Amino acid sequence: MANVSDAAIVEAYGKVRDDKNETNWLLLDYESERSDKLKLTSTGTGGLSELKDNLDDSKASYAYARVKYSNDKQSVREKFILVVWIGPNCKVMRKAKISVHTADVKEVLRVFSIEVAAKEKDDLKEEPIVIRLRKAGGASYDGV
Image 1 (tube, rainbow, N blue to C red):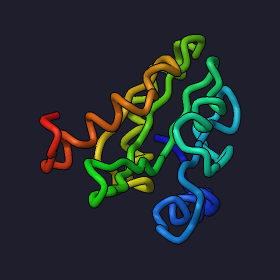
Image 2 (tube, rainbow, N blue to C red):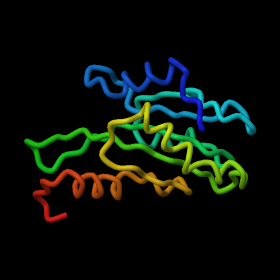
Image 3 (cartoon, one colour):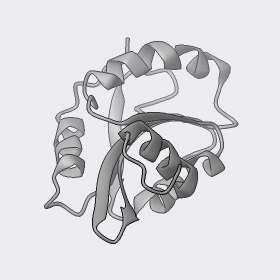
């Protein structure tokens, strides 16, 4: 069971969800290699590209992000994604716990349109994620 009791996590989640706040992503990491306690590592305003720069190839992490996209000039949408990051050099025992811990993380980071399983930074390219968000959203005017 993952410990997600850090009050900073809930505060950062609120900022990402707040339309009036520029913060559009947060990143959670484990306190140490053997710990099951998650802590807020960082937040940012630079979208998925900035988030990717903060991921560590040797860690498993969780991220929550607001993605803004448009179908046309009149239709701008903001949707939220949950990212489950398992870096290519993440240790086996940490990988083994991820599926169980993800359920605990979802108790705190609970409102999102899609979950993105990322094992490489390229898994967080914005275009494929926006396509998935359009499909999940139901109304797609450009045939996607």
